[in-house]
Length: 243
Image 1 (spheres, rainbow, N blue to C red):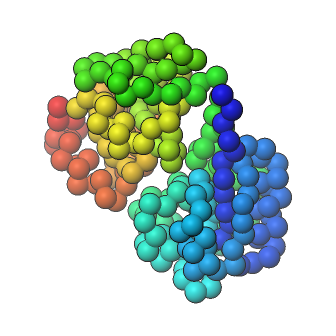
Image 2: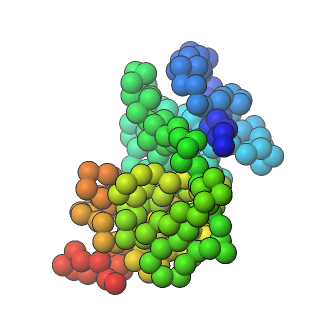
Image 3: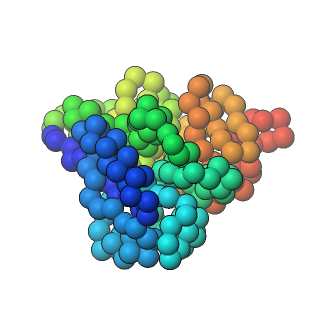
């Protein structure tokens, strides 16, 4: 099964910055640039009619700022901020952006950001979920080349959403299945906690946390602003997860 490329757009009004992003994207063969926009409103109109997976968004753009864009738009794909201004970083991360690149940034820093957002899927690991074969208990079955493969919930570290797919990160592998994270949340048992619009985490695998992120060993997962109260309620004062 072949996976399509990650579809992205650029919202950036400065020509040199557009050209740098185009050049960098040209070196990443699993991301496809669809459009470049000089202003936020034109981009908003495009997004109302087209699906994309990733947005590179400048802060200082005509008609509407990048921060205003994030606040106004609902159900956005994943966003990487590209800006010369560092002072908006906290507010941007509170609005669930995946990374914040300060201009000028190197290709290696750019590559780290896009890898964090959307690792290129391994076609051999694209598993199709069969809802009828799911379990309400400790596991679920996934269709792998017409074979039903069991995924044990206690082996799942966390689940990451990528539009119509979710990446199920387990102790052994990364399983990719075409299903929404909301539906995945229903399939998993109460041992999982929604911490972000893009992340579910296995409570038993959490090793540490702070006000902004949760750690599964060395993996940092962001806490979305709309989920902070839910996450806080899940932790006791001792730092243990309420079951």
